[in-house]
Image (cartoon, rainbow, N blue to C red):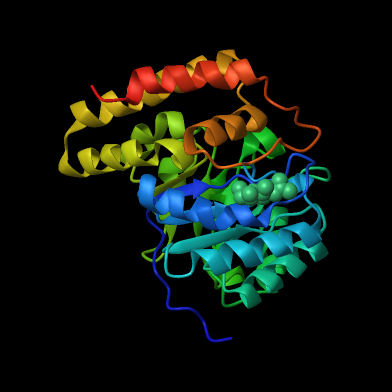
Length: 307
Ligand SMILES: *[C@@H]1O[C@H](CO)[C@@H](O)[C@H](O)[C@H]1NC(C)=O
């Protein structure tokens, strides 16, 4: 396949939920309306499919393939970027998914560090990623760092040292950790065609100040339209406005966290706010108690409606 014309990743990217039926099977019919919702209601033009929010590590490889096909097909002409997460514990499964993502027309692939046998060094992690990237050498490749879930705490700056020589398709990082010094060092090191994207939604503004090129997160599924205003306020240098939006996000998320904010609760919140049928999460995540989602929805409206 010819390499896709490369467009640098920027702006807001929603980490999508995986829609299930009430019985817990993948429901592909929701994906078309889901893309419409993101594009029309949230002004979000990029998606990150099957990462943490998409419960990818709880899906079978076969399910991940059909999901990729559906997201890529439905996103055609509507989304600027479809990045497919292909991380698995087995490097062979990751290669299989990477190859499949290339055939399916994804705009890029991303990989988390394996976390049962963990890479102990930056070099081990680079070697793992090199093997995955080599299965789809023409697809832009991103390292997806999320230390709170993987337990892999190798500094990203060390991981990306000289990585372009090992992985010519390397194009950046989805940085979902809180270490802003490491983040800043990545931005400072990164090459002109790389994107360093931030993934901790509640402190995005700090990462923008540090030079983030964009953001990937689950809350952009339903507050993307507000966070787009945060991005434009920041670009205009209106920090008062940017902070006001960031503080509302923080208030919403700290409220949700007190109620036990996991992907199950988050998914139910998205379902309530968007009207999409996303179904329950898959075990070991537990379904969200209905009243919890309702309380967070009320908080959302009190913070973000009108005013
Ligand atoms: C799948 O989603 C569609 C669209 O929301 C819905 O109409 C349908 O009932 C769902 N299928 C099942 C089996 O729940």
